[in-house]
Amino acid sequence: MPREKGRKVVASNRKARHDYAILDTYEAGMALTGTEVKSLRAGRASLVDAFAQERDGEIYLHGMHIPEYAQGTWTNHEPRRTRKLLLNRQEIIRLIGKLRESGLTLVPLSVYFSDGWAKVEIGLAKGKKAYDKRQDLAKRDAEREILRVSGRRGKGMD
Image 1: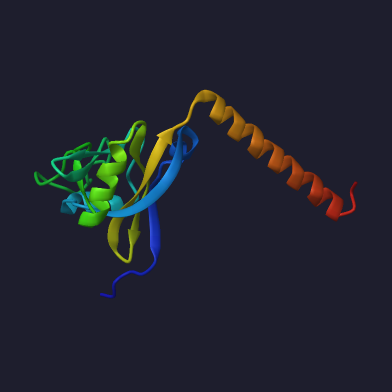
Image 2: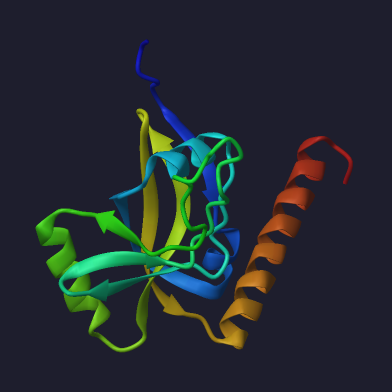
């Protein structure tokens, strides 16, 4: 059976980019059980309330929900268990150093299959204040309005 190619997104955390300013992104593998992989391949996962944290020199993903596999038996997994992220040692050291800075956290942005391997994209993030979120919304609305007006002008409507 040929190995699948490309990137297939299973779940994305759209709220993360709204609530956090993403400074840097990393791609990490995940240590999963068989039923977790089968459930992910069925397209079932949730990154709501998920976060990554350092413990004992390793990075772990907490709060990610992968529902139990429907055809699983007694070997089924715990839906919200802590999962180890697989990163290079240099990346882990760099991330731990940055996490020790004030106000930075690791937030999962998306879970996907890359050439058949389950991966998670994590972002080094700084929390936004309420006024930052309002400024971003106002900026996006202004850009959308400019595009709308320029599009109408290009079609000869104005």
